[in-house]
Length: 265
Image (cartoon, rainbow, N blue to C red):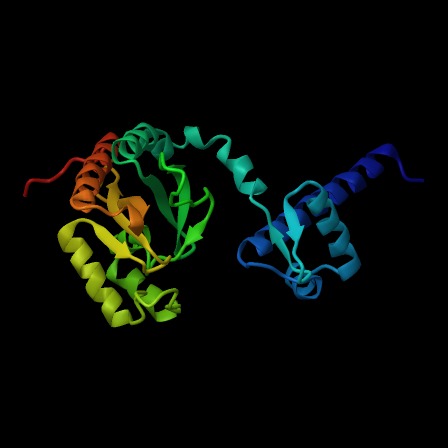
């Protein structure tokens, strides 16, 4: 006869398996823009009826949504949950007041990005004061090769890691200005290293001007990028230089507060 201890062990194993399966589903959905039930089932190793039950629960909890093509994908809720404690993350916490000053002084949207899964992950955004503004939500992943923020992150890679990136990355032409050649990308990254900032105009999104600078940690490693972005219709004489001056100042202040000391050698 089964005793209470055996029943508790069975319940514990069942709960553990359910947690494992749920995490596996969420992780699988995080690396793709959407899976059908048939596509996802073999990836997570579940029968379709079982997977459907898990997905239904995640839908009710608003962690997963299903689009018109019957593809399941993550909502922004999971990232929002993680971001509730984002001020406890040292970089984001330190960057916040400097980003607020930067956006206040320039009037434009500032974005803090870190490198994640060969893309630029937006971890903090301070929006422009204008109604018509560049809008990027926290948690978005942007390409590295055609955004100023991403190009800064690429400039911090070792030669070996950069070579791995350009050998695998497909350079999708989002606009007519998008970098389409690995050779051209290497040239751009070389210029960024020499100049200390990146600039993109309509490379990823049409009619958007972007500037970005690196954020360094205590040992001089690029750990993030800070960017300013604005629509071209708000471009005026001297705006680019004014924004760059303020951006360099803000990124330097954040780096200093992260322990970075500029070498005068």
